[in-house]
Length: 340
Image (cartoon, rainbow, N blue to C red; front, side, top):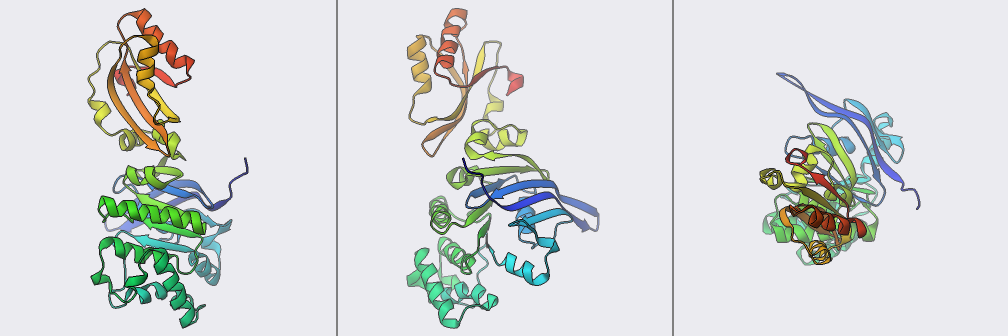
């Protein structure tokens, strides 16, 4: 397997804000590698530091400590001209779209090309129309933002963000203001842009469904620090951190009433999502089991997540069920209420 090329690297990055009540630590010792061409998710609860993190990546916020490396170069140490050029390689879209109300759709998309100063007026207009076609809005080129729906505004914002051929697209809660159906369409568009244009996409969100839908890897941030990072399928199947379990499994598992009976936690870590694991176990071992809790998802046709089942009281029956899981190599472990 070929080594993946890192496009953005955060080394010991920290960010502190000075307030009237004293310093506030927004980010503390952040270490992350983001690979070229991937869709990378950063998720956390409100106030965890995720939006500050994405703004430090493109230097909208200047880190207080550590380094932000873009293609191996320290952004903070670059001459101003080189830093501007690097920042132009990072497009950004926001929750509230941030379109210019006095400009029509076409001129909104042209705006970053005007700022860059490397496009003629005709080149900018041709490029803008090309991008509006890509996002499905070529027929709305002369409309103004006030005449657009939320989904249309975000499509314009995406076209604008990639107008200057960036290498990275930063998405800060880009679907939070949209309804579920529009969110799905925008996420599909981001996947298309990543696939067809090779742009690395970094998604900041508090919604697990967004991570599940499009991301290759994810970092979970909690109280200004990275709690865990890894492949989406690995973290969804077995989150290691407390905040990871809270975000992925929710609160339902903590409400399960546990008695002294024997229980096991089955981990779904990438088997075919249509495979009836529990039904097959019951049929093969000829013993009933009681499902106490389940949180599984289909990610790319694979089942990930966890399930807690209560085994029969009879030891022989219980061992038959356990033997089946061992035989078909399904990961599991015995649990008590304290383990969940």
